[in-house]
Image (cartoon, rainbow, N blue to C red; front, side, top):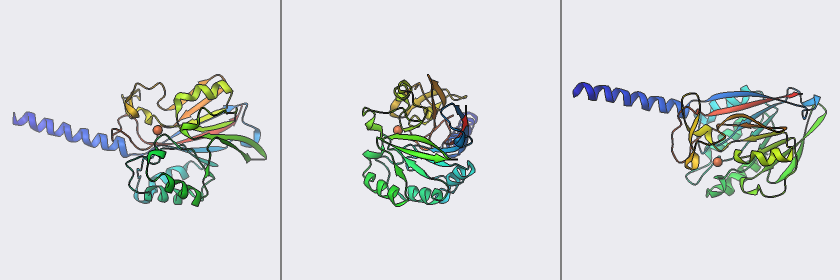
Length: 259
Ligand SMILES: [Fe+2]
């Protein structure tokens, strides 16, 4: 009996250590988007996609997260929402991150589903404004690089049913609506929300996503539909269940190639 409890305690400790590693370690995922939509001036353009922080810190003053973004050498940083939720206590974690990335590249933001439910929502937007982050909320901006221009569209999570246009690049928090952007002929959709499943099987098959969403269709990586491509981040933080398994936090880099 004593031997059994010793083995059980050891396995439990290993399980806890593994869960801590899976929830708190950080990785980078890199993808290429090759498309006729990419003009020559954007060939080699890099986007860093950061999503679903949910109040989390990676290193003291976000140093690990900032370094992961810097290592991608991005020309643009896309923040696709859910940085805060109703449990977020303060915005120090967000200020530290924005301070760290402020001189790396222009930053664009769209709201996720959780952000507006936080009492800190107004303060978060004041912070985004303070750091010069471009908040997209049903509007387009033109971005230029190498003498060429691409059209970037962003929507807050609840704005989806407004008319949308076939932009080259779309920021939208929820991947399940990728088909709407694909039907319109948008180019690249950057998204988050499902946390890589958050609880997944070895190999990454998503089991339980936030909002108790079982076996989500989209969990992370690259998806294609018609002429459109979606790059889906597995995000960084947690919600509902505060553990990740086989869905480690990630920063995503996307390099554009003229097709
Ligand atoms: Fe979300």
